[in-house]
Image 1: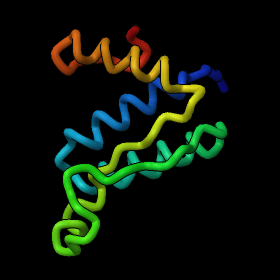
Image 2 (image 1 turned 30 degrees about the vertical axis):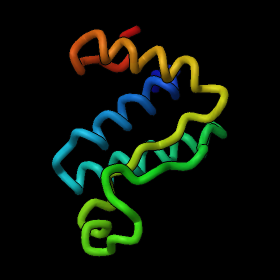
Image 3 (image 1 turned 120 degrees about the horizontal axis):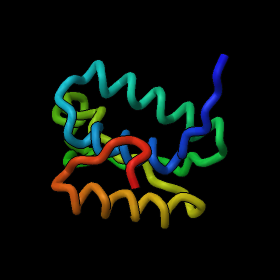
Length: 99
């Protein structure tokens, strides 16, 4: 079986972008599960925040519970921010591995 090293900051930026812009809740649930597993397994989990929904608004919170953004830890911040700039400079487009 072939192995390849994947950049965690790269996956995190890709996951956060798709969690913010995706429409399919099932896909978002799968993406959340995947990125949380990767972050925990690599010691890079630093929490998440809910986007676009006050936590005290239960009706909208349940409807938007997958609108989250995972926080990069201190070891990933610089590279994560650089990847955000690449996406911004490419009008919202970036492939995993593109720098």
